[in-house]
Length: 114
Length: 116
Image (cartoon, rainbow over all chains, first blue to last red; front, side):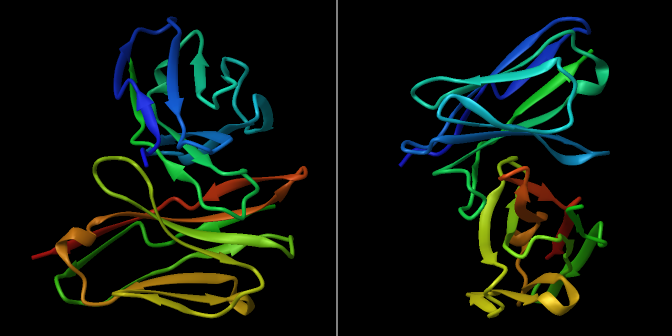
């Protein structure tokens, strides 16, 4: 069974640009969550999608957005990039995202904003 | 408010030593779930264990064991006879209802270095 796949693995962008990250969950998993990991802030929840609907959202500015497709694949978009957006972005999938089941994480996309 | 505290930022041990990673959580929910994840240098978080708030039984899995105590709001993780391959960052996480849905709240992680 394939795990969670995130693409690309590495990205370098310039301030002001926008970026789209992709996440393919484990087959059969309908919940996809995104997290930002930085040395200073640790792992912070961005948002969760379930059946193409955003079900929960963290405390991030509107520059961070996402969507989920009918095949459960998810994309995350960050517009008007800032230096502080440099981070490892992790995607996690779970069967139903109800908190009682474990989440499976991808290897992440390391975004560097210069 | 929901919160997870991992007070140990970094721990170094010599191979074959036992090591305990501490996790203290805060939540007002009566139903919640606690997790431990391991993050090796490759980046992905690897699930280790889940425990629900109604099950205070300790668990042992090979060299790993977990001690859940609701009275002290702690969910500690012990590695017995540590090995170099155990070197990683370990995260404790809490999943509890906020606004009707669950999300994970992670601690800041403990970096474990096992020296040969």
